[in-house]
Length: 85
Image 1 (spheres, one colour):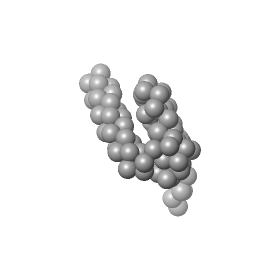
Image 2 (cartoon, helix red, strand yellow; image 1 turned 60 degrees about the vertical axis):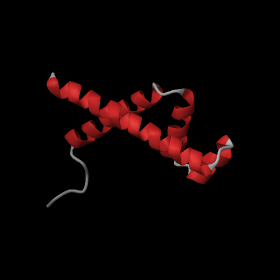
Image 3 (cartoon, helix red, strand yellow; image 1 turned 120 degrees about the vertical axis):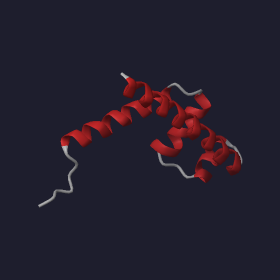
Image 4 (cartoon, one colour; image 1 turned 90 degrees about the vertical axis):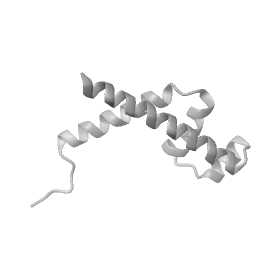
C-alpha cells in the first residue's frame, strides 16, 4: 500500500529548496523582495499588492514576471554549479 506522505528524503529535498529560494529572495533589491514576499509568502493577489504598494496592477505583474525570470536564472546557475561538483 502506497502512502500519500512524502518520504524523508523527498521532504529533506523540499526543505532545502525552500531554504535556497528564501536565501535567493533575501538577496533581491528591497522592492523586488517585497513583491515576492507579498505574492508568494503572504499569498496576496495582484490587486492587493497593487493597492498595498500604490501601483497599477500591470506594473505589479510586469515586475513580478521579471523577478521570477531573475530567480529562475539564478536558481538554474546554482544547481548547474552544484551538479558539476
